[in-house]
Image 1 (tube, one colour):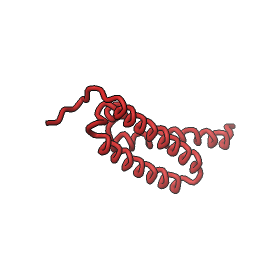
Image 2: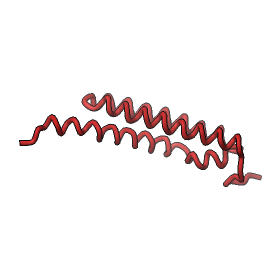
Image 3: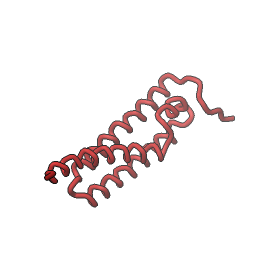
Image 4: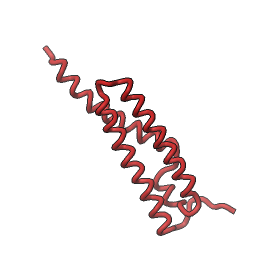
Length: 111
């Protein structure tokens, strides 16, 4: 007979992965990619970072709701989501800073 408790422990890993991916998707949905941020930093850094911040706030809200709905997996949901927020936000900050420090040809032209 299968040990049900053993199966439940594995669910934390799934909850962590899902939470991590959802956080990445929400932030990406709200803004452009880090590559676009870097390439167009001179023109759009402020706007791009505004949307990174909005996406981050939305992500934190979704993580909080998911953790509230599923107390059994709360730790994994929070851990995956928070890790994703930290990593993704750092990627955008790095892209913005790199683009401003070393501007190359932008992918967008404004007149």
